[in-house]
Image (cartoon, rainbow, N blue to C red):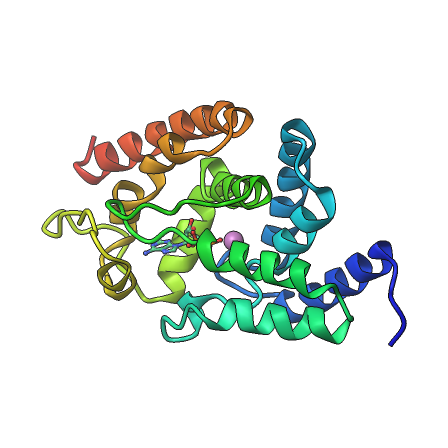
Length: 219
Ligand code: ADP
Ligand code: NI
C-alpha cells in the first residue's frame, strides 16, 4: 500500500473507531472519543505536543478497553497496532501510540500511572477530564448500571486500591468510585491547563455527591 497522507489516516481511523464504538452504552461510546480527541488537541497545542500522535492516540485509546475484555490490558494496544499497521503507518509511531494506550488507564488510588511523553500526558489528561463534572457523573452511573452495581451502599466503604489487579476486581457501588478514583483525579493531572479545568469539574461533582448523600439520609 502506498504511504497515505496523515489526513487520510486520521479520517479512516475516525471512521473505524466511530463504527466500532457507535451506540456503546457505558460512556465509552464514540462521543466519549470525540470529546477526548477535542480536549486532547486543545491541550496539545497549549503544551506544544505533536498533534498527529495526540489525535491518533486519542481516537484509538478505548478501541478495546480491558474493562470490557475480562481485564485483559494488552488487547487495546494490540488492536490499535493491528489497525495502524493495516494503514502502513510508520512503525515507530505505532509503538508510541501503543505505549500511550497501554499506560493511559487509571489503576487504583495508590498506583502511579506515569506517562513518558507529552503526547501521552495530554491524552491521559483529556481522558480523565471526561471522567469529571456533569459528564463524569453520567458516565459513572451508566457504567455502574451496565455492570449491575448498586448506586450506593453505606455499609461498603471505598477501597484505596494498591494494585491494578485489586482495582480491576472491585465490584463496589458506584458512589465508591467517586472516592476511589474521580475525586482523586484533579491532583493527578499532568498539565497545568488540565488542572484548571479539572478543579472546576471537581467542585461540581463534590456538590452533587454531597447532595446525593443528604437525600439518602432523607434531608
Ligand atoms: P480509564 O481507562 O482511566 O478507566 P476510561 O476512558 O476507560 O478511563 O473511562 C473510565 C470511566 O469509566 C470512569 O471515569 C467511569 O465513568 C467509568 N468507570 C470505570 N470504573 C467504574 C466503576 N467502578 N464505577 C463507575 N464507573 C466506572
Ligand atoms: Ni477513555
